Each structure stands twice: as C-alpha cells, then as structure tokens.
Image (cartoon, rainbow, N blue to C red; front, side):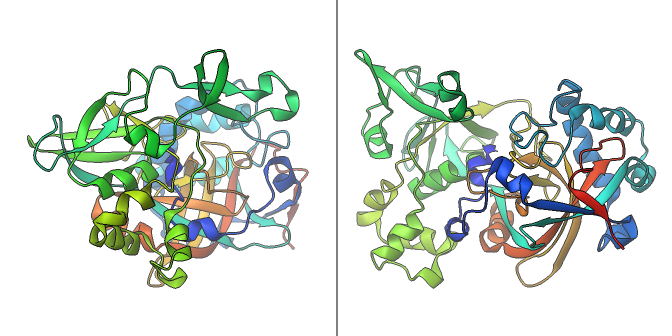
Amino acid sequence: MAALALAACAEQEKKAEAPSPPKGAEAVAETSLTRISFAELPGWQGDDHAAALAAFRRTCPVIAARPAGAPLDPRMDGKAGLSGLAGAWAGACAQAGRVAANEARAFFETHFTPYALAAGGKEIGLFTGYYEPEFKAARSPGGAYQTPLRGKPMDLQTIDLGAFDPELEGKRIRGRVEGARFVPYPDRASIEAGNVGPGAAPFVWLADPVDAFFLHIQGSGRLLMEDGTAMRVGFAAKNGRPYTPIGRVMAARGFLSRENISMQSIRDWLKNNPEKRQAILNENRSYIFFQEIEGSDPELGPVGAAGRQLTPWRSLAVDRSVHGLGALLWLETELPGGAPFRQLMVAQDTGSAIKGPIRGDIFMGSGSAAGEIAGKMAGQGRLFLLLPKSAGAAASLSSPRG
C-alpha cells in the first residue's frame, strides 16, 4: 500500500459497488474549481493545523525530489492533474520545516489558496476508511501458527506495456517466464498449494488464516509476535491476478445478503464455516507478497504510496491520476454514527478502488478499534483543494466565487 494501500484502501466489499467515474485526463477535464476564502472552508478554524503541517512535512522530501517543471505526481494525467507542477510546491515545502506549531494555520493561509471542487457538476463524493490491522504471529511455524506470509518470488516479473506502445502507457502486466513464453503468475489457490518461485519462502506465520486473508486485502499490518516483539510488514509485490471481492461471491451464493456485507460479517462467516472457507478465499485470485518493514516510527502507520509513513486521520488515499501525492485537501464528510469530520488531509496513498476527483480513503490508524470504524465508513462528502499561490495550476479550471 501501501501502498496499495493499497490495495487497501478501498477493498471493503461495499466500496467495490461504487460506479466507475471517468479516469485520468477525462476526469480532470470534467472538473471545475471555484476559488474561495479560508473562512468559507467548513470547520477550518477548529482544525489542528499543527498536526496537518506535520503530515505535510513528511511528504515534502518526495516533492523536493521532483523536477520543478514536472507534475507534482508522475501518474497525474491532463498535463498536471489538479495539483500543478512540483516547482510550485517547493517554496511552501522549504518554509514548512521552519514553522512553529502555533504558526501552522498562518502558514497554510499565507502559502495556499482554497478551491471548492466539483466533478461533472457534482460536489459530493464517497469517502471510505482503511486501517493497519494488528495480528498475532510467530517467526517459526508451530501450534496455531500455520498460515504463512511469503516474500517476493524471484521469478515474478512486471512488464511496462508503455515501453511497447505509447497508448498503453501506465499499463503493466505481471507474470513469469516458462520456457520461451511469458505467462500469468499462478493464482491464490495455486500459490497456496506451493506453486511459487524461489525467494517466496515464508518468513512469518499467522495464527488465523482469516487474519492472513484480510492482511492481503489491507496490504500491510503490524504483527504482535509470540515472543513479545512487534513486526511491521508491508506490500512487496502482487501476482497480477485481478482482485475479486469475496463478499460479492458470498452474496451470489446466498451465504450473505447484499445488505449485510461488511468486513465483520465476512469474517464471522469465514470463521463459522471452516469447511467452505478456503474455496471462498480462493475466489479472490489476487495474491500479495510481503516484506518486513524496519526502522518505522511506532506512532505512525505503514509506508504509503508516497514512500512515507501514513499519519492516522491525516493521510488520504486518492486517485493519483487526478491528485498528486503530497497535495493538500480539505475534507468535509461524516463518520459512522453521523459525527462530522472536517480536517486538512495530505494525499499520501492510493488504492485500486479509489477512482475520480471526489473520492478518498481515510487512513484511520492501527488495530481493532481503527478497523471497527474503517469497516463501517462510507460517508458522502465534499473535497476542497489547497493549491500553492504560485501554482497557476487551477487557472484554466477555476473561477472566483461571487
């Protein structure tokens, strides 16, 4: 994830039901920005601006490494997406490291201009949540610890199709060479049966196969080891097979009603039906390979797509073809139960189900409490952009209010 967060993001069954919005440059073309004042941002004065600044600072080295004349994110379509060029963000990043906590709000108001975002004439989009799970594990198999996490196999290769045809830029396929042919990599069932290349030896074992499956969906997690230590694992690679939401399969077979599909209901059914469990899990042919993540800050989350650790309640997974990693976005939505959520977020991750300008996945932290909220999060909300005053990125898309 993160990557995938990957992956993660957004892999809840209900998230997969959202209609597919326009992609890339098409999505940007359908987008409009309206310049507003900070006073018009709902809840702006009440936010913890210092916390947002800390999250923004963590991504600034990534921004600084981009060429000044390049888009903020290399995956942005439509020239520079909605985030502008990296050089426009450089000045704010240079100043961010020298700003005291009590000056954070003034920093944002000095260096940025807020814009209300609309796509296809609509201002409302879907906002979901994801988290970093914590699971019991051991460094060696034994007793209940029988479900492995595997490292990246040496024979797994990724081919960039854009190198063969410019129209396929950004498209990748994964597989391995067998004889003189490049073929798809084995699917979940085949890998579970041992059909996997060298280098994919298990390096840690979980106590619960259902936990392991959801760790594959999340893409990263914290493991509470049997010896009392902790290990953080993250995404290393995937087999390239398409992701299939097993909740949809379970509903089609009558195991769950469509209205009752949630992370918890799926977990409960799998644990209560062990004889049918593996067949259902194998319906998701996608398989994730992991790596141990060392040297991370325990107060933060896993490493996201921006290459920096995620910040609970500040990191937002976005569609990178529209919003660049490192971009600032003000989010107004509701949490499960109806509590308002109005905070400054930093685009620091992405996910396969996060598509469109007004769509995001909130990183909610680590452990079961965060997972409980993330599993229920599906709020409608609005997104506002904070663009550097020097960006000029919004010039062709924006108009002042009034």
